[in-house]
Image 1: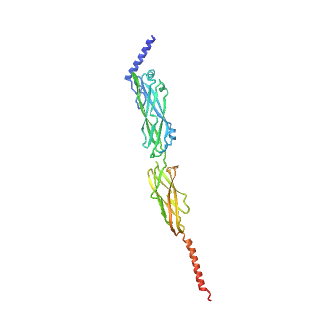
Image 2: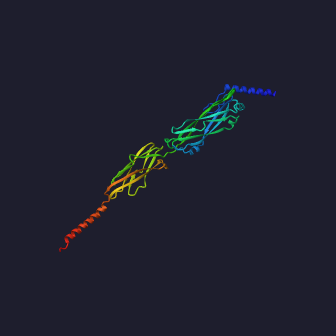
Image 3: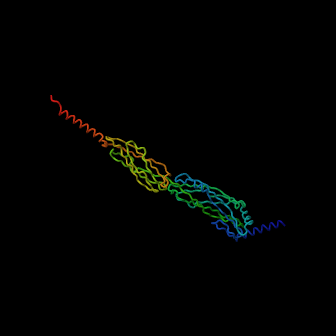
Length: 339
């Protein structure tokens, strides 16, 4: 008698599950929620998340090292329908031991960023009622590298699609698949880099009375408004030089500054030479403390020729000496005693 009751019960359950195939209304895949219509409804709920502090702590430096952080993926099977409870548990039990994949795909990313996932397909095993009692989590790694044209401190988005295909079994309600989009926001850092080039020859020859100029072309190769400062380094003794203190450059902008050099001008003939070094330092215009690497460029100046500067220091005493000599000459010539 007991065996007959068990058989009748099993037949009854299978009949109900079979009927559910025709009157079940599946959940909307975009919501991942089960609508309580039909007899037994099963569906996936997927979630993709990351630790915001890990992302904020990553230095997304243009042309820098790869940034890496963990992506956590959780999967749950939800239940619903008129006969939820033991019947949905029995339906889910029929899938026990089967494997389902969560497929991850980068759908959108900034054009100046290279983004990849170490693993795109994460397998999950359905073990009885485990997935609905406690979501199962797996982890993959995402890597991001930023090109030099990434705009500094601008908000950027990466859209990740998580997709789980429906799972089907004969005479058993399907586990309805799901597809969801998750958005990761990050900011590339400032890239303090400029290109400084002396236009034309880096060496010139002039006279000690000349002022010698060199044009220096500066291009902002960074990713934000940059303040470029100039400093003349270790100027040789008796040489003089001036240069523009600083200029502001937009991204990709080029400007020309000039260094003017005056050689030593002391009286006499000169054959002097000097190597003049200029330090070029970029910094973020909105934050002067965010400074890049200082580069040094140099120019060579040769001074040859005669200089009259300072002749007065010699000429006046010379005139006095000549005047005294003339006076003595005429004095003795006029008052010389006659023999």
